[in-house]
Amino acid sequence: MGDIIVALATPPLKSALAVIRSSGEGVFRLAGKLFSQKLCSIEKRSSFVGYWSNEKGERIDQVVILCYPAEHSLTGEDALEIFCHGSPLVATRIIDSCLALGARYATNGEFTSRAFVHGKIDLVEAEAVNDLIEAASDEAQKLALMSLEGKASALLKPLRDRLAALLASVEVGFDYPEYEEETALSLEKAEAEASSIKGEIDSLIAEGHEGRLVKDGLKVALVGKPNVGKSTILNLLLGEEKAIVSPIPGTTRDVVEGETRYKGLVFRFLDTAGLRDNPEEIEKIGIEKSLASVDKADAVVLVLDEDRPLDEEEKDIERKARGKIFLVVVNKEDLREGKSRLEDKRIYLSAARKEKAQLLDALAKEAGVSAGAFARPSLNSSRQLSLLAKASRSLGEALENAKEDTLDLFSSAVLGAYTALRKLLGEEATLDLSDEIFSRFCVGK
Ligand code: GDP
View 1 (tube, rainbow, N blue to C red):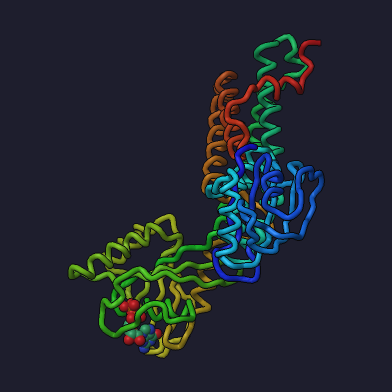
View 2: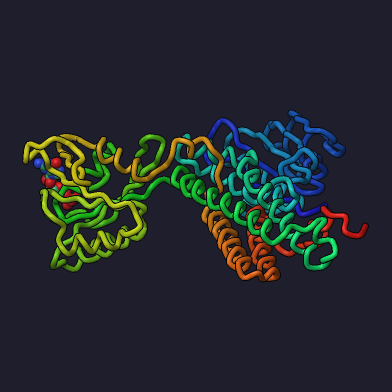
């Protein structure tokens, strides 16, 4: 019997049903000892209804079992799912019976990692499993599903293959100069190909950043002096009383988080303590959090309650927010009998009059997420984006080297890009290039 893992796949709560998953060589034999029917030689996906007993033969529950032989299972090994009644006690006893016969508890993500190890899914698809579970909006769910279906990996594979072909042609030029005219690309052509691949990777990076916003939402910090109406604006945006609103300056001392959805994007708001010149001790903690939240945010909304230029403290915030979305909101327009409007890059509104559309529109616009980003697969995790960036940098270096006519440096930089894409897909980091590359050419003829 191999290493059989077992885990509860549903939350440990009372419910109609609970699902227990188990996977590993010999799992059908193990289940056969506990289930009222023999399950030894299962060749296709099958379901059974019967009784599950513990190792002493005491019946626990009536269950349905789905058996997946290795070639039809997610994990790439024999696996089964046990559907029992949704009692945490029943589920625990079923799991305990498996443990008693030699199975062990699965670690986090171990079913998915086995699927990856057995080549059932690549790393991008494996990441998508988690994205799907974590998806906070319909759009994020659709994006994760596209990755799970392999559509994000499919963006990458042609580029990986083109890099392999490019490497091959350059290597041929090195090792078999006599073939150069026949098979190898000229440096000029190689450069053009590297540049075209870099262009495509750069587009993937841009689309990935948009995808990340669709997936993770936009973190927005609301900052400004005490009493300008930050908590009121936050409550308005969230549509619930999440932050404490008070006429006494400095009452919101903690960062309060909440989220709202608008035009397919999830905005995660961080309410922060006011900024003031001479903070008292406790207020100071709040201000530090306020500044820290600027660091954490993708967008900073600075709230004023009158139409005036920014003071030094506020300009500091603006500087700190450089490179991020930065919006100025002038609140309490009701006191000046002004309309809600966008003017000179400032958003005028009255939180008391419940005006929020202008602010949300501005945030959505500044986020710059194109309509396409909701419908197109993308490589959007930080791991994926950093490896894409690495590939792009390597190709940038390759192009620099090409200018200096140094073919070996060109080739090693292209190899860097190729390796980054392989890592992205979770393909082996150390590989014998010759197999992959030279199998494309019949050099030895
Ligand atoms: P914070 O300290 O920046 O979070 O400010 P609060 O949200 O606690 O608001 C401070 C005071 O300003 C409260 O009395 C709010 O009711 C009031 N306030 C907030 N927004 C408006 C507004 O648009 N118009 C008016 N007239 N009062 C407002």
